[in-house]
Structure formats: structure tokens, C-alpha cells
Amino acid sequence: MSSKEAGMIPSLYEVSKPIPGTEGWERMYPVGNLIWKERIKELEEVSIYRDVMHWPRALTPFDTDCIFIPAFRGLDAYQHRITVTPVGRGFYFFLINGYQFSADVPVYTDPKVIEERTREFMRRMIYCWFNWKWLYSRWKKDVLELLKEQESLGKQIRDLPEPYDDMEIYTKLRAISSGRKLVEIFDRAVHIYLTIFEGYQYQFIGAAYATDFVFIDFCKKAFPGIDEQTIGRMITGVELEAYRPDEEVKRLARLAVKLGLAADIKKATNFEKMRSEFEKTRNGRKWCQEFDKVSFPWFNMMVTQGVFARHDEPCWIENPDIILGFLKNYIEKIERGEKIERDVKALKAEKARLFKEHLEKLKTDEEKKTFKQYYDLATTFYVFVEEEVMYIKNFNYALFRRNIKKFAEILAKRGIIKEPNDIFFLQFKEIKSALEDLSWSWAAGIPPTNYWIREIEWRKKVFEKFEKWEPPMFVGPWKKGVEEPFALILGGGVPPHILDLYRRRPKPEELKELTGHGVSPGVVEGPARVIKRPEDIDKLQLGEIMVCPHTQPAWTPAFAVIKGIVCDSGGVMSHAGITAREYGIPGVMNTHFGTSVIKTGDKIRVDGDKGVVTILG
Image (cartoon, rainbow, N blue to C red):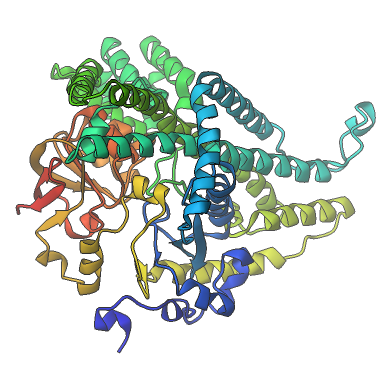
């Protein structure tokens, strides 16, 4: 009897068996992220799980190099070696049949080691905390310069000249051929992307989360019984640049109403067709000009199913029908006389009230001073947690992928690969190799090899089998829960009742109540709208409760439409948790089974105070 039939958590040995017909799949991925026989004994000592909040689907070789490897490599390096968190050492991260599996690297337990790491951690964090204003200003300046360079590289990516190379090799003393130049542009594009993703993304995230840890820990000790959502409400009402894309959509909606274009937008079914009609009128052209002004960078928002984007997931500007859906919802609210802005004033008043209320509970001046210091730090770094997502997981990825697609078009045109999207079945080093193959065949004027075409056809068939596989959420033997600090604050961890449900595997219709983390207060009832695919966001109707795996900044306009939110994963400081509080709607995170059990149209109750979701019918 298999582990699945027995209702047990499957073993690593069982899970890592290849799917029939995929033998040899390991060559598609980096060797350091595979389960070799010699690693099984080592990994059986840790609790292994799938982090569906970040990686809900199978990863192609490109996705692995683009998001999976640099995400973990950067996080581990900063957490263990640079930020020097006192106990956390990072993660094991590996792939089985194209799917991500993680485990905490066992945390430090030796008091002497923890004491030494704590001293070094505080030395580095204090420097960040007391120099934050200029550090963040420089961080943003550097990132923006790299993003602009990535955008400018796109203008240099062009097919190789025929029948001769450019004369500028002599006139500008360029020296290298156009084939070699193309390879070097690719190298630079990858370098910029990884520098931003693997470096700038994590440079201050440790300091930001450290402030959360410190503030939450102080509050729990100073105010016994306080819940994390109350702590979260103390730091809401912040003006975030991360909400700028949403604000620009709202501005465009108001402008459409003012220019008499609202009716045209509401009846439109395709953004590009609507735009072509707008270009024929004075007011329409004026609206389009305003749209174009804010498209870069604000509409380079990746609408992803997980935290990180994949090669086949859209960004707003690549699929403007997403923006069209948001515009329609905002216009309808404006026409009904409803507010579409966040009530920041009310949020700030509530924040001030909670701060004062808890400050007055403290007995000594020293406690009050410490509370205020931690509070100030938490509200300051709260901004970075959201904004780094926008710059790095959205703008950085969107621009890089756009350039990769240009390389893909050249490779497909030249017969190195069969079609442009095939490039996403190659690792970075293989794309470079393909470009070098192109450079050589072009230089000599001979037909290119068809090696990559054959290899990619095999990989696509293997990947089809991966996507049909149902990977387990947990791999045994499960010895203890998640302890890694970053995983807990962002993902919420794995509560015992979730593990119990997974072991019992009840039928979806048997679950009428789900327990998670209440991250935003209030109780609301209404129809559910299950959104599993990011491109379905525009199906949301006013007054529905969104049920989804996870959200990120590109989903923000949805929060002005819905009246409650339920997520499979996420903690008090996840994007969904933060934004639910900012928009004043009840929210429950980390239900694990929300999108599996709840169906669109179900009437549900979301209790953000208790962290309970009830299916009413």
C-alpha cells in the first residue's frame, strides 16, 4: 500500500522516483538542486515541504535559473552570512520532477553561537536602522539605474546583419563581431537581472524583517494576549509607492469619466481595439497619452500566481485587458458615487489610537522608550517590504523577460530553436551556448546545428508529464514544524491542524470550516470568487470575497472591489495581509485548503478576528 492510500506522508525515497517516461530529466536542471542518492539520508533528518506560496507550479529550466536559484541563493547568503540572523541558516532547496521542495537548514541551538551571532546581527542592523534614510535613497537610485540600463539593452538586441557585418567595426573600432556582441549583451542582461534579484532584493530585507521580529516579540511580551493582526494594524496607513500602479489606474478611471469615455471603457472587451478607437478622437488621444506616460515603469506589474513570476505569466502592459478590468470596476464605483481611494486618514487615526492605547499600558519610562523606538523602526521599514517587491519581482523581471524574448525571436528566426517560447526550456548557460552556436554558424555562413531543437522537443514532452503530476505538500518523515524565521513571518508556517488534515485527506465537501491566520479584523459574509490564475482577476465582481493562493502588488486593484480575502498561504506581513489592513477588509491567511475546498459562488463567512472561514452554502 502506498503512503497516499494509507493516508501517510510519503517518504523522500518514494517521492523522488522518476515519473515513467521522464528518465534523465535531471539534465534539465542545475546539479546542486537535485536529489542524488547520497543526499537522501541527510535530507531525511529534516521536514520537507512545498512552498506553494512562492512556487505553485512546475518550473522550466529558465524559471529555475531566473527565479528559483537566485531567490534561495540570495536569501541564504544574506540571512546566514551577511545579515547574520541569530538562529536561522536558510534553506535546503531542491527540485523533484520540476517542482520546488524546501526544508529548513537546522537552526543554531548552541547558546554561545547564538550569542555571538546576535552581537554581529545587532551591529549590522543598528547601522541599517540609524542610516536608513540615505541607505534606502541610494538603494532606489542604484536599482533604477540598473533597470534603465536593462531597458536600454533591449534597443541593442537585433538580428545579425546580412550579408556583411557592420562597418562600425572599423569606424568605431568596435573590434568584435555582431555575433560576439550579441552574446555579450546577453551576458550583461543576465548580470543586471541577477545583481538586482540576488543582491538588491535581499540587501535590506533582513533588516526589514528584523524590525518586524523585534517589534512583534516586544509586543507579545509586554502585552500578553495581543494578537498579530493588532500588531499589524499599528503600522498601517503608510504612504507606499507600491500602491502607485493602482493609484495610476484610479486616476485614469477618473480621467475617463471626466472626458466622457466611461461608457466606451465599460462596453469594451479588448483594450487594444478600444485604444485604436480612442486614437480617432481628441479626448480619446488625450486619455491614451496619459496612459502612455505612466506605463513605464508603473504598468510593468507581473500578475503572478505565486510570489515570483514565471515565463508564461503576464504583466499589465503585456496584457492590458487586465488593466481594462480594473478600469471598469473603478468607473462603476465612481458613477455610483463611491470612494475608490484608501481611507488613509482613518487608518492613520486607528494606528495612532492603538499606539497610544498600548503605550499607556506600559509602566516604566524605559519600556515606553523602547516601545516607541521599535514602533518607529517597524513603520519605517514597513515601506521597504512592499516596495522591493515592486521594483525587483515586477519591474526587474518584466524588463529582463522582454529582452529574453528578443533573443528568442532571433534564435527562432535563425533555426537554432523551433519557436521563440522554446527558449524557456533552456538554462541561462544553455541560452548563451545557443547564441554562441548562432554566432559561429552566422560567421561561417553555414546551417546551424539542430541539437537544441531536438533537446527542447524532448524536454517539452517531459515537462508535460511534470505538469500532470500531483506532488505532495509534505515529505516524510515529518519530524518538526517550520522554524526558519523568514518562512514563518511571510508564509505563516505549518500549524499542526493543517498537517493533521493533510494526513486524513478529507473530501472537500466534508470541510465546512477552515482555520488560518486572522490578519485583518472584521467579519463579512458574501459570495466567493476563487481566483487561481492571475489572468482571471478581471472576473471579480463588486462585493465578492476573493479566495486565492496568494497575492502580490499587481493584484492590489482587486482590494478596492472585494469585501474580504482568503488565501491558502501567507502570514501577518505577507502582501495580502498588509493590503487587507490598508484597505480595511477582513482577511484570513494560511488556510492551506481555501482554493481546494471553496468554490466560486459559495456563500462564505470570513472572520478576520478569529482567523476562521466558514462555508455557509
